[in-house]
Length: 72
Image (cartoon, rainbow, N blue to C red; front, side, top):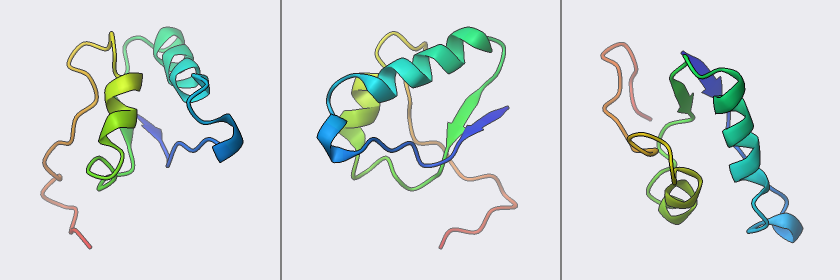
C-alpha cells in the first residue's frame, strides 16, 4: 500500500494537468501498489478525482474506513 497525503496544486497552476501527471508517474513507477489518499476529501473534490482517475482501473473512489480508524 502507498499513501499520497493531501495532493495540492497552487491555484495559479490548477487545471494544467500537474496533479494528474504526478499521480500517473507514481502509478507507473510502482504498478504493484494500491494508492490511497487522505480520507474524507472525495465529496468536495469529486470532479478532481474523476479527472485524475481517468484510465485508472476502478478509478479513485471513496471506500469504507478500516475498522481501527475512527472518523472525526
